[in-house]
Length: 331
Image (cartoon, rainbow, N blue to C red; front, side, top):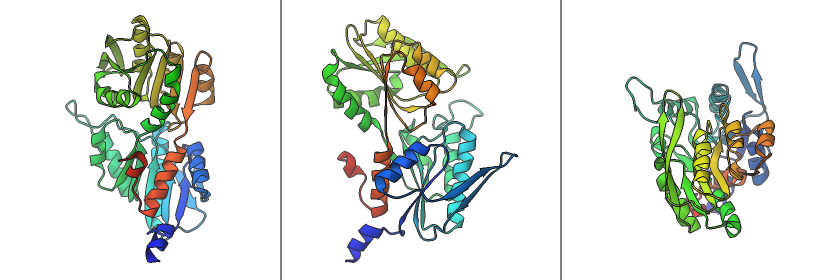
């Protein structure tokens, strides 16, 4: 009986869901999946750009999940996350989990030049100090960032969703091949190609840190008269993805599928993708895409946005009940 009660109510009281302002659609999706309403809170931006928060009800002893992104505007959303975490901690929550579909600064994961910071480590420290007992995020740019946190967490991947969608499309494709945007993504690309049962090709490129841009130099593999699936973890400025698409087309590709997890879309990314020969774009809603940007992208190609809310909701349920998350993926 005690074990059954533990599975029902969890170790930390009832689930309480709170949402910041950065990713309301995912927060609502998680709420709908779990059948648990989002708890009330006030978040006010003062004229001096300070952020003030207040909970409508006490969370003392409860298992609290704060859903907040660190996507654009990055620093405003990051501060909202930290302030909300501290608010929950000071109200004596039993456990606080930061649910961050897209974690910022994950590209700053090492000292690759003299006199530069490791900002990803700083972000991890800030989240912990602000009051998080656990964290949950998706598809970090580099796996070693998990080691920057001294609190436990669930680093999930949306590639299971992407693979499921691609498997549905494979019967309509002509001799498909996976193409990675650079050699650094080769391992993940190989794993995805193996899951789909199709060959793989690679783009060789070089990145200019001064211009924050990449130049695709050559394509290794066969894309002639094939449908090409270009994969990456995120699209930021859009340069790598667009250049890979142009190079694949020059090498005889037929339909070009752009597949990635995080639609960060900085600067002129949408314009670059729109001007590219990409015919299908498949991504997720870990980062909100402005409606105007979606209209531009949909003018010349099919766009599919997969919902990560059920995945995050199920992981929250399992974390609350003390059940394995790996079992969801046969791990």
